[in-house]
Length: 138
Image (tube, rainbow, N blue to C red; front, side, top):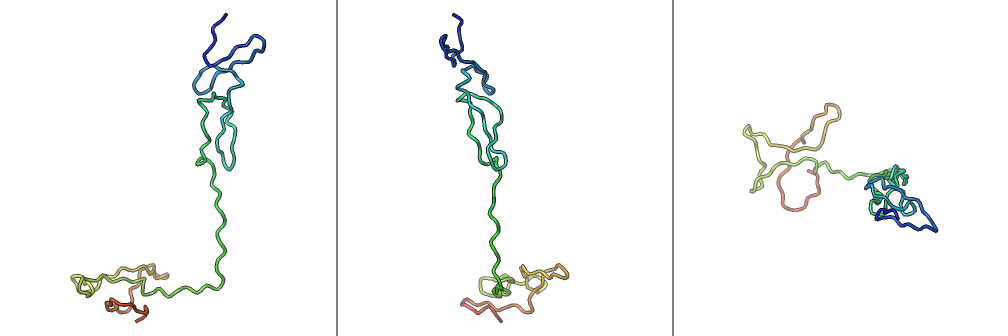
């Protein structure tokens, strides 16, 4: 009798085909081999590789396309808060005075931008330091 590979079964009354795994190269019964699938776009696609059960990879979902839901509908007639005072921040010292540069001007960190010139616009006057709650104006 001819020796046969370790992963195969041989039966003279019911012969079955042998095949070679496309990953590891071992020979086994073809009916035990499995088609390899991968994520391509939004579905699983057969890669046409036939592999043994030990070489079968689980499809990785990160290889597929992510479907994002549509953006929510905007609020009709929205009223944004007046955050102008929060857009300008002076740098304060521990005693509460505004930190000045060597030339005597205050250093301003601003997030507001003038749309015409593209530069940041400082406020008219610096606000005084207060430890309590203020309304945000003045």
